[in-house]
Image 1 (tube, helix red, strand yellow):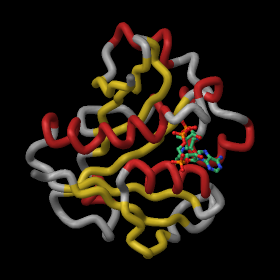
Image 2: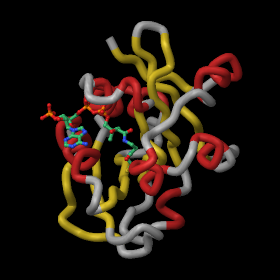
Image 3: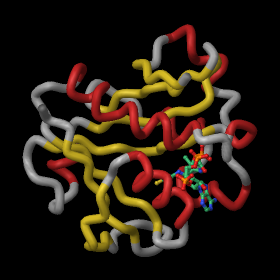
Image 4: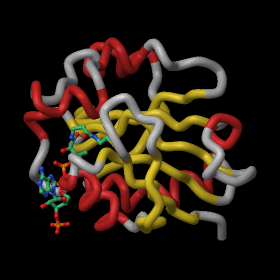
Length: 157
Ligand SMILES: CC(C)(COP(=O)(O)OP(=O)(O)OC[C@H]1O[C@@H](n2cnc3c(N)ncnc32)[C@H](O)[C@@H]1OP(=O)(O)O)[C@@H](O)C(=O)NCCC(=O)NCCS
């Protein structure tokens, strides 16, 4: 069973243990690099399985101000990762499937969420599609590591 929670201070010890493989670093960076993005508009979340922290992501409430493809009322999903020892067990997909329910409960003033995923990261794209995101068929070219697919999930009820 997989659960999403807003990250609290007591999660920190487990969160800083999360890592991805060397080849995946270009897609998300290290957890230390990710954590510096947290502020009052970019909110950290943990993915829990059996009461262990197995993954992490950021919800960016100002995404629509910074990415012109995202209309007002859009959130952004950033730095989505499952710790490398927990990957390949279906946890990433299950957590994406939990997202729309979680977001409609905790972010009711928003209607949809966007993300960009590197074209060289087909595994992650597949995970998002399996979890309910749609491929907008548009590319975002502003990323440091090359073109990215723009994906969207509508969650408003
Ligand atoms: C992308 C990521 C979150 C997927 O998490 P995961 O728990 O390993 O994924 P799952 O086991 O739930 O797999 C979900 C689906 O994606 C597929 N998939 C996952 N990784 C894959 C890979 N590397 N290659 C091909 N398919 C892959 C699975 O086969 C599964 O397919 P299915 O739905 O048809 O059964 C994880 O690999 C990760 O953290 N990667 C590093 C960080 C990253 O790239 N994040 C994305 C930033 S945009």
